[in-house]
Length: 494
Image (tube, rainbow, N blue to C red; front, side, top):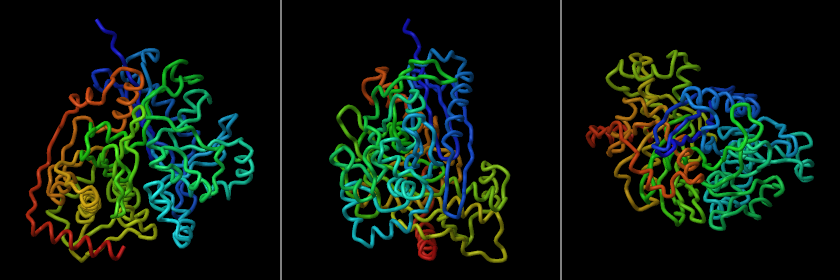
């Protein structure tokens, strides 16, 4: 009888760390989750403490293994998925963080991006990287650190500093400082990656003033990066063999292996990705062209649309307005009214992402009258999340030349039936929710398994994907047109 194998997936997200233990039959047998502190030193600034992130990883590994009731030495391999553009710097020799990480939501480099646009640099940036000039991405965050953290540039130029997105930080810590690597999917989110040349771009490094010696080595998404060393939670010698940014990992975890297959993840933000195959598709609508994953020497590309605020809008209802005590209560509050009335909410609490790319935009609540109550506001918040995704889907259809016949969904907010039904209604296509909503971590586990030889082909995984519920559109064309007209007016004012 074949020995059962276990994969440990680290999903290091924006608000917390989630660890899944998955067996070789793709069953989740253990998991753990822990939130960590969000730092907001100024308006528009968002930071994370790298030390605290690492502590959550160690603790979740221990708890996940205990939940699975397996010994640490029974783990076959480790996969990593992560919040992507978040930018970290640490001492090359000691691993000591040299500043708090600047989170992808952070908007402090808005002026820098505007200046580069005024100089006419955006076309070259988009042609090289597939991205746009926006504070969302890593390069301007790293440039800000080099310019504002005391002594950092001199240390970087002397070869004493490592830069990385969170995946790089985790591999460095998992391997006891032995490896400084990233994967192609995360590299493609930095504004420093040459999308067609498959490596760091000398032109982009020069443009942003980044010394090349700080950069990690770019590797594929499924291979041996190193082995564990010096961890509290795990023994030495476990292979670290899978890695992808969170949205690409979710696309992989949703078994979207063929061109045209698409998914939307509803987490802190919402992210719609379409597999476009082995050739990058240039967007004309404000979407991003990005690496989906690299297996061996084959790179698969995706179109991506990003909305910065989705689940974070529900957190705002909870923490800012104190309309609910727990995020899960939003659906009950929204169902307390038959519809949102004339209330419309634009979730631009951190600017507008694709297809608008307006970092100056702000959240907007409009259409209130004396009859409006918190139920109308809650329902409008959920509808606003879905309406953002509608815009992304329309842009994606235009760029790719093919419609999205079915949308697979995942992430915490996809558990909200009211939101998913409205998403199907406003899109006019079925929305399919899988049995396992943690597809980001599942994707990391799948990649780790491929990197460790548990599977040899992604199609071996497809048969294990299971739908839990399908939401079919019920809204008539007239109601959809009216809702979209109200949304358009609100976005113009945001």
